[in-house]
Length: 348
Ligand SMILES: Nc1ncnc2c1ncn2[C@@H]1O[C@H](COP(=O)(O)OP(=O)(O)O)[C@@H](O)[C@H]1O
Ligand SMILES: [Mg+2]
Image 1 (cartoon, rainbow, N blue to C red):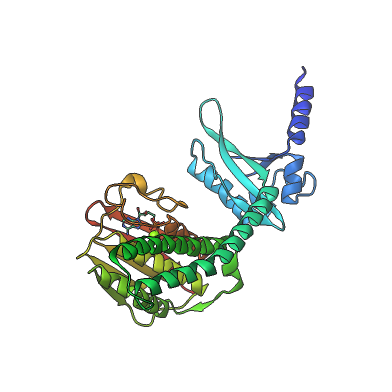
Image 2: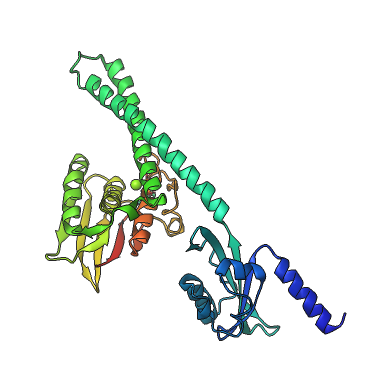
């Protein structure tokens, strides 16, 4: 086939793809894109050809492409990058293009429309949220009733009855915890935090959270120390999300530290950020588990953790809250010595 005809059919093939394709040279100049990319990115005809990638005016995409070109990684792919342009949601993969000598000559971007999937996902979240709300009240009142029975207020129980009822209460407590965690996850996924953003005095929120958790530490004979710098700047964020983040980090530290241990909570300022450090002298996390502890429902399974109950949702909530507040979270740990979580949240 003559070269021209081959090029034309290749263009026809690329234009017929259901995903968008955008190719740049190594300087970031756009050299090729197909019809679907025009539609998805709102480009008029071939007007973006020979323009720098910034021409497409989509910050997230430009950053991804520039990063791929700068890092020159063999297979740099951003798996789930959603670009919000109205109702259209895209998943973007950017890969470096190499010539036969393995030299970087440009980038190729694949744009996959996931709007429908994203809409279905929203329905799933609101369904989950609705069911959890419905379960919350009856479970909470059953928990209260079993506590009343156990307290002996309505009559003494024999040992066997007490033992059974204690088991029932622990089971219900587990379910109530799960419902609360699921509701927190839904709150973030439904974008609830966006509806109520305010200036937050994080020091005050932390103090109140610690007061709330202090009894848990005392019950386990763990020394919970708190140090908060004076006159910290405010941050812009959602109060209940930030509270949930503090509660999860501190209660994890208490939960995964054997009796007699220490938990230290420090808050200060670090280069225009609020820095929160939660460290414990607990069981620690192995390196292999680091990448997974922030996943939903992931719990480390070992002899040390098998008798500790939990949902595996706490750190996923923490991570989502940190992300939605444009912060970062870091974890350092030594097995048998302790763990430190460090959160940075940009000040207002
Ligand atoms: N401070 C900590 N010390 C040791 N392990 C921890 C700590 N915090 C979290 N982990 C580990 O990370 C896992 C996930 O934490 P999380 O999402 O809060 O779930 P949960 O506490 O309900 O198990 C925990 O199961 C635990 O194995
Ligand atoms: Mg937890």
